[in-house]
Length: 129
Image (tube, rainbow, N blue to C red; front, side, top):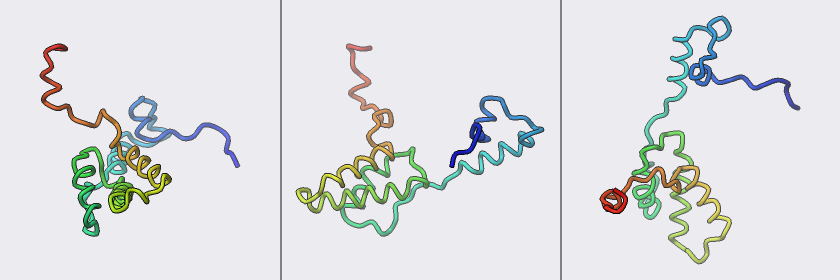
């Protein structure tokens, strides 16, 4: 069943856009402390359970992705396990699992070209300098 009215605005957004009111939302210092505490996740660490191709996938795709944090660990593990399954039997890997693997890659930001670093060859292009 639907509820009436607009959804409450998150504390972080109230601080950013300047609509935080101490009479309604409490002190600004308390709100800032709550926002910084809630936004913290630990670093993404490779689980010891990954073996073989799954570990190679972690080292090749997940470890260099500095933008990932602990909140993405389940998706990263699932991606690596699917990759290992794909490498074990590529011809027997169904299209549905390809879709799952692409979805995990997208969720982890592995398909976004803005997350990649430019090669030295691309930077030294005289034509566009």
